[in-house]
Amino acid sequence: MINDKRILEKLREEPCYKSPDIAVVLGSGLGSLADGNDSQSISYSGISGFPQPTVAGHGGKIVFAEFGGNNIMMFQGRFHFYEGYAMDVVTLFPRLVAALGAKLYLVTNAAGGVNKEFHPGDLMVISDHLNLMGTNPLIGKNRDEMGPRFPDMTHAYDPEFSQLLTECGRDAGVEMKKGVYAALTGPSYETPAEIRMLRTMGADAIGMSTVPEVITARHAGLKVCGVSCITNLAAGVTDQPLSHAEVLETGERVKYDFIKIISSFLEKVSV
Image (tube, rainbow, N blue to C red):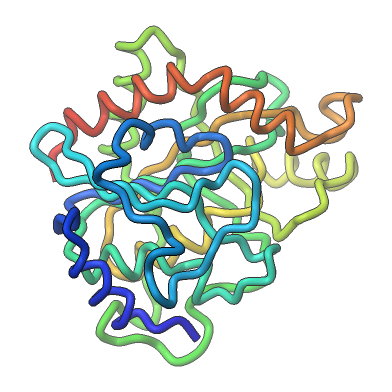
């Protein structure tokens, strides 16, 4: 089991550490937001007891930056259930930043487009989610010091912050989509029949991450907002074979719009 206390102590000892106001998790191919801040970064491998990402497009760094007077703690790469990590590892980030005093948890991810109106390269503000991973990170003894046994998920994604993301997109000349993110375990991509089922259930985009983090963040009292980069169309929406290479290629193609929008949001947001 991950030793949160030990990792917290190690983080606070780092020369570049600043108590975060906002945490940002950068998903597959979206780590470019943290580029250029290497002097204020810590490698995951440099923190004793910290897990390591095994998926391409997840850089494995914590970067400290400042936007609009807010201290930002960016995680360049996350941990996935399909990598074989237990849920306490998958949800490490929200527990850490809540203990460090952060107020807002901004999640980003690469996702497959289930909504037929979506196209590769679209950016979607997450309005809600479907947890279809077959488990919940809060199963087991409740950590009363973090949050209640039965946390409310009515507004898992904060409407005010989500609206600000949409406005930042508009100001950048980008039409931000809005929709429901469905999380499955992976690592195999879904079949066309599964995608038809998910569309019927109300999913607009699908991925293999994010939802356990959001549940844990809300349990800990963090506000949450999120953006999915639609990096490919899901099976059955397209006849093209699906690959992780396409995910990374699309992330590279949209990175300038992505950086502009998220940077603008971080400059404007008040927590």
